[in-house]
Length: 216
Image (cartoon, rainbow, N blue to C red; front, side, top):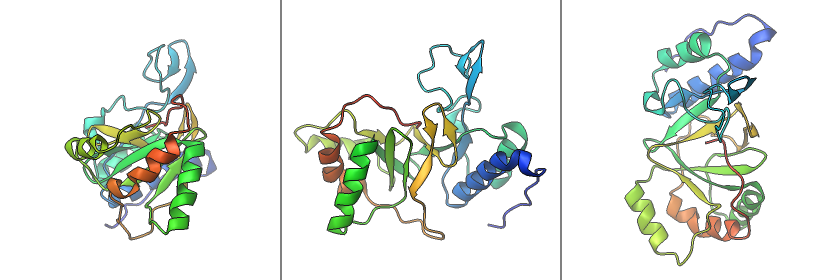
């Protein structure tokens, strides 16, 4: 896909420009994206959704809704350049990419474990509290079958499949900045199957409390 010309003045919109570039790159990979709500400090609460009880300020879909996520480059450019510059970058999971997330400390352990065994993993991202491994699309039925084979699954392990979402770098949500631990390989769209990683993810998550949240 030929990338459209990007337009923003100088350094004062550098952050907005980086988000726009990241959104266009994600769309080019076939990952449907949508701008998220923003963390805010105002009379209406900590999030631009204006819900004073928002549990994920600056880390969830709002307007436009998640169902509007797209890979259309023109729409993506309009969103981040004109309608919502600087908005967090969310990818809708289920169609072309899914994810499994776990506490940050567990993520460090499981990535070291996979590296020692030579188990390939795809792109990995993290916040100060959570780590997410991007995986190939799975259905809820497929995931349910895999989990049913396990005697117990920790609550700190979470699945971002159909109807879900994950925040992508370089977004800044209420829980902190999102960054790549292992970025996508340029020109590569390979993602691991969740079943090949599940045993290690369960083992690594079992020792971690279920208290932290990933900006999805």
